[in-house]
Amino acid sequence: MKIYVYLFLVACFFSCENSKENKTIILSKASANYVNWLSDPYINIINAYDCTNLDSILLLADGIVLTGGEDINPLMYGDSSNLQLCEKIDFRRDTLEKKLFDYSLSKKIPLIGVCRGMQMMNVAHGGTLYGDLPTEIGDLVIHRNNGEVMHDVVVKCFVAKNAPFISFTDSSRATDFDYTAMIFPQVSLADTLFSVNSWHHQGLKDIAKGIYVIAKSYDGLPEAVAMDKNIHPFMIAVQFHPERLGKDNAIHINMRDRFFEAIYY
Image (cartoon, rainbow, N blue to C red; front, side, top):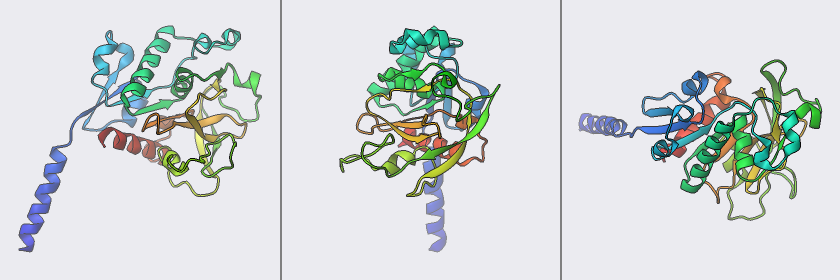
């Protein structure tokens, strides 16, 4: 009898595994690091930047990633003074990523933003950016130095009302842990430090309504954000690069796993 039960459970397991559906993730602009990070036998990856008809691939999207890259055109957030502080701007990419963001928002497609992708999430939802961090907020924290650098970020879970981090007074909303757990593993009740990689000279300034800051660097710059779950069930973004942290890094693993869970369930 025990043998039959065992065989039945094994058959159920393999039946569930074989019934797993293929899903499609759209990268706004792909690179090997992002593809490797999201690699999975059941995941198809499409590079939106190489597609001539974005509308056709949007219909396939089960998940969207706004990747890192060039500066965002400051005219998108109404600040022409920032034009002189900008480096390379890709106008086509700005338009493409705004469309990806809008589609994710309207269809509730899970979305991750990375570096520029976090900035685009904020701008596309009505926020603004610093045009150049050393010029506008100083060099207390070095966010790049001829390439990638490492620095700490502070994750806030439970904070006072009106603090710059997320704070909920409405019990109908999700708890802080529901947001931090989508990005950071093993967050405690107290402030939690994580070491992350950084490679950017712009950052979030005015935070768009509905976007909550859940981690900051020591100079006060937002390093991780999440959209209010009443607006979107899974829309998160980080200023650093989880795809480059290494396959054994806890943030690298946690963000990927939570993203896949949102896509499948």
